[in-house]
Length: 137
Image 1 (cartoon, rainbow, N blue to C red):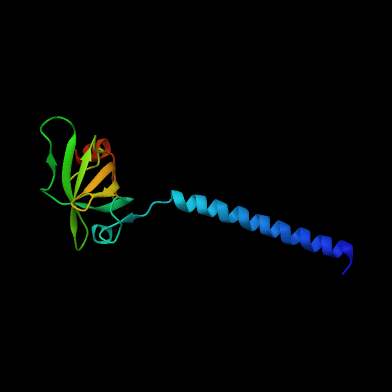
Image 2 (cartoon, helix red, strand yellow):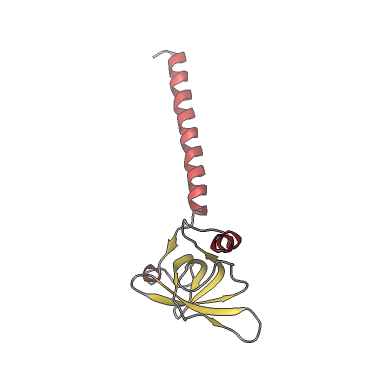
């Protein structure tokens, strides 16, 4: 193998290696920002105090609001098998209601789930309230 061929081979291998490292770091950064959610059944397997997203449905009749006006709220979130009590302080999304899907970011304390953020989910047939009320008349 001549000097030029060896130089080209090492240059090609170096370029491929650098591209591979670049792609690896990009995918690692993207995967750390992707948050799938766990269900109440899967939450049992998660370590206590770890920040996770909890997904499920709000149990009808379980919403309890604090009367002090501090914005404290607690409710049950369920999946097909289990449910867990969720505590949250703050303003709830407009789409939040009983029986509706919800995703909460927070930590499992062992006795309840302490949420720092609540996201309400809707199905694919969602229409804004103005459209839904106008269509009914």
